[in-house]
Amino acid sequence: MKQTEKMLVIGACGQIGRELTVALRKQFSRHCVIAADIQPEDKIDLEIYPYKQLNVLDKEKLEALIMEEKITQIYHLAAMLSANAELNPQAAWRLNMDSLLSVLDLSVKYRVKKVFWPSSIAVFGPDSPKKNCPQQGITEPATIYGISKAAGEYWCKYYFEKYGLDVRSLRYPGLIGYTAAPGGGTTDYAVDIFHHAIKGETFTCFLKEDTALPMMYMHDAIRATLELMDASGDQLQVRTSYNLGALSFTPKEIYEEIEKEVPGFMIHYASDFRQQIAESWPQSVDDSQATKDWCWQPAYDLKRMVSEMLSKLSILS
Ligand code: AKB
Image 1 (cartoon, rainbow, N blue to C red):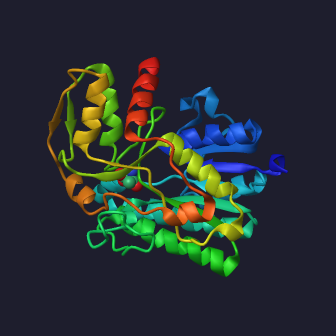
Image 2: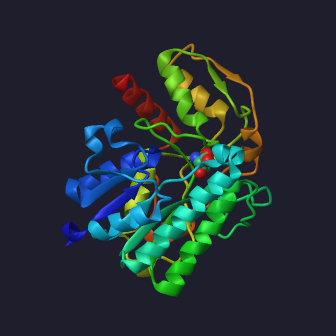
Image 3: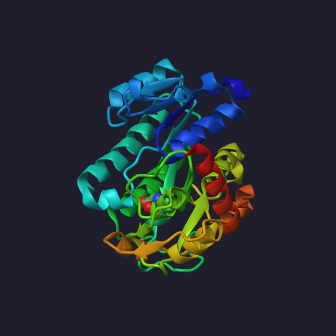
């Protein structure tokens, strides 16, 4: 039954896309999962194949791909993240919203069975509770990225209710992985810090030392995505996007954990415009609805994540 699925991962060269493509191919098979991204084909490693170059804003090309490949599931991960979006608000809105609307529209037209679209903790804003921010916490985002994610969540719910399209979504926290670097986010420091530690370089952090944010190891994020997509539709009470929690730490706390394994590693703090974005987000989220509906449980704590990141990155370097 699983073999009849044909999946399209849009944004497959990005931080989540790369690992999700590999995980889906393990669960299904290589030829069932088509990776698509804006990168030209000659820049792609062999492990990403089968691959199609796609600018997701090119709706005609997206339509041809869905139709020709008889796609049954779409994972739409292409987006501009929070910090870059603050610097390019119009372009961020176009990319984040127009691409989602094309995916939703074409999914209805071609009877795609399931769609995954990532939301973010960025849907919350300065007036949302800081600790254990609830599923239904106030969503009045202060960033253009957050506004696009909040609006996107309602579009997903609307397509589910109006057209019966099975769209599923998670509000990812900051994600930390070792295969692909994030780009243009506010939580990126928590990945960059590892690369500096491995190279023996002092790290300059763009957030203040006591700025706590919700975070998650990539393995947990990928597993959560697969578990949500595997869950039976009638278990899912949330058709906007699920809060998803695992860790909450400050730059100082992750630095101290890394320093235990890399003695002498140094950090320096020089906060910039990203500090204000971080301060508008909650420090931790309440994901009990995800636990209740599809049994979500994170597996990695800070210590385990730090140790695995350092050992994987030292093998790769
Ligand atoms: C970002 O920092 O913009 C993202 C996010 C929290 O969605 N990692």
